[in-house]
Structures are given as C-alpha cells and as structure tokens.
Image (tube, rainbow, N blue to C red; front, side, top):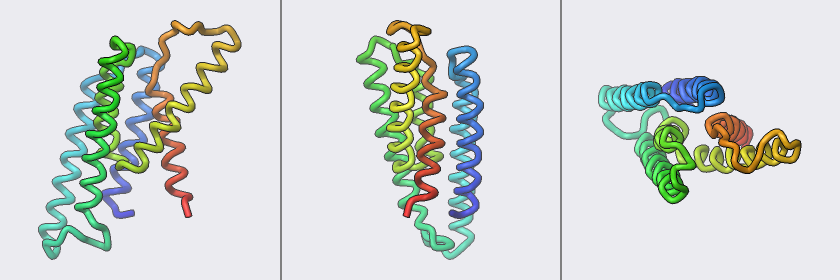
Length: 166
C-alpha cells in the first residue's frame, strides 16, 4: 500500500471510531464531520494528482494504478450511497440521512471491495446485536439502534479480512 493509501486508511478508521462514539451517545452523525471527511479526501486526491504530474505523468506511480483506485472509490461511493439513499427513502426515514451521507463518503476512503464487505459485516453485526438484546428483553423491535457503531465494526472486520487475504 502506498503512503497516501495508508494516510486515508488511518483517517477513515479514526473517523469511524469518532462517529461511532458520537452516534452511540447522541444518535446523530454530525454534518461538519462528514464535510471535513469529504474535504480531506478531496485534498488527498489533489495530492495524489500532483504526485503523478510531478512524476512521469502516468496514472501509475510506484506500481500503483491510481486510475483504477479512483474508479473503485467513486463507483463504491455512488453504489453504496445510492443504495442507502433508496433504503432511507423507502423505509420512511427509519435510516437516518447521516448514515446515508456516511455511506457516500466511506468508499472514498476504503474503496469498493472493502466497503461492500464492510456493509455486509455491518448488517450482520447489527442483526447479531439486535437479536441478542431483543432476546434478553433489553430492547423491543421498535427500539431505534445507532447504525454507525455497527458500520465501524463491519469496516474493521473488512479491513482485517482484506489485510489477511491470500
């Protein structure tokens, strides 16, 4: 993984931890944090572009194909963000728009593969957590659950799976 990739991974993980705590405590995903994440990622794209321009002008630098990375991140953003937007609109806003905006931004940091796997693990962890608490009669089926902690859990698992894949 190249240096910018490590930086964006670290920023993404720290942001997920922060947003998980905020969502757990306040049941909100702050717009200012999401905007800061988006601006930070755009700045990282600019740095990547400048490094490429100063280099040999190819979209491949240090053995990394930046065009395919950019395509993966943007397509993941549109795919997952659009999917969560449809769920939010169809569910009568049971899914918050902060979660939707987060799902537009996370693939820009983690790419399509990790994001798809992260969403799978996030929904699986949400199912397990809610099943346990409903089974223990601590929650009812009407209890509103914060999604970002499960998203963070899912993305951490996806990062580990991606790191240890063969």
